[in-house]
Amino acid sequence: MKTRIVAPSMLSADFGNLERDTKMIDRSAAEWVHIDVMDGVFVPNISFGFPVLKAITSATNKFMDVHLMIVEPEKYVERFADAGADLVTFHIEATECVDRCIELLRAKGVKVGVSVKPKTPLSVLEPILDKIDLVLIMSVEPGFGGQSFIEGSTEKVMALRKMIEDRGLDVLIEIDGGVSRHNAHELYEAGCNALVAGSAVFCAPDPEAEIVAILNA
Ligand code: DX5
Ligand code: ZN
Image (tube, rainbow, N blue to C red; front, side, top):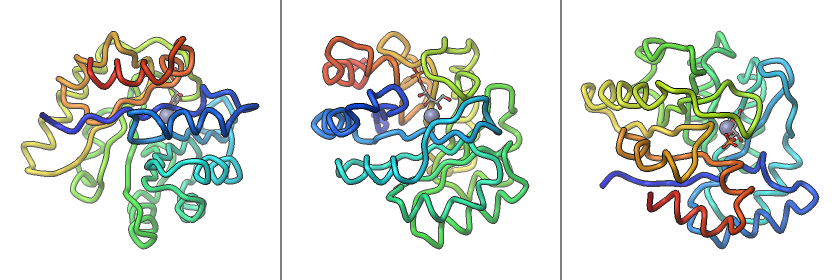
């Protein structure tokens, strides 16, 4: 069986109880913590930046999965690595310096992810697929938690899995947006390695049990 990872998105955490919610993830079966950074330009919403990432990092030993929804990520990727990211994912639509972003992150020794929005075709990944560790498929328009999963995203994952296997590469697939215990099984089967879940985890009556339910879907 392929790697199965759940990455709870802190965007849906209670920011007034950030340490409590981070410790909950730390105790849980989730291997990764997903951190959504939004600049109000690439997406129509603003979330948080370095101090919050540092606060979360100091409250857990889990793998820090940082998802940048910011323009010109080349200006900031190194600072996210310094703030505790283990993986930094940037959007291919947000930069004209994709190779530069990859080089800067490699030099920092962190894993490199590239994300595509729902309407961005997988063909844009062809020149860089052998240079990165992960592709993050957006299954909602980036910007907000709690949206519905866009139909067709599962097929996009299957096509990407085929691209990766045809090239004999070892690239992880993560999916983000509208993921819950109800679609987790089909997403793992389609070839996803990591599922991001925000509202499904944090709005559940028992978030730790919900993480297990997604993992074992
Ligand atoms: C949206 C973010 C997501 C968000 C997912 O732009 O990238 O990570 O937190 O939230 P849910 O799981 O509620 O769709
Ligand atoms: Zn995200």
